[in-house]
Image (tube, rainbow, N blue to C red; front, side, top):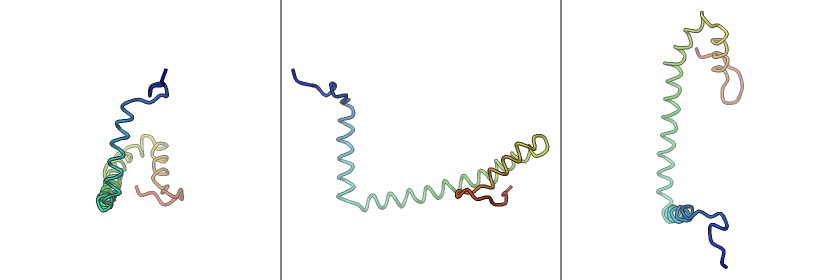
Length: 96
């Protein structure tokens, strides 16, 4: 009796996905300028997304959290402390 793919836990759809991945990989290898162009586009999109998030914080969330300043000062203080921590973990003055 011969072993089948299923005996080894291989799903036939995974095999077809592997074929697609190999084709995509060889396309990138054969023409790296496509990958470089895509990376440039993705870098621009990341920058735009980060700007949109910062705008959301500044224009919407900071304004909303000001409503807690009087009614729930502990929540407002925690929010200000969280906003004051940058990506390196060092504390700066709150932006709100």
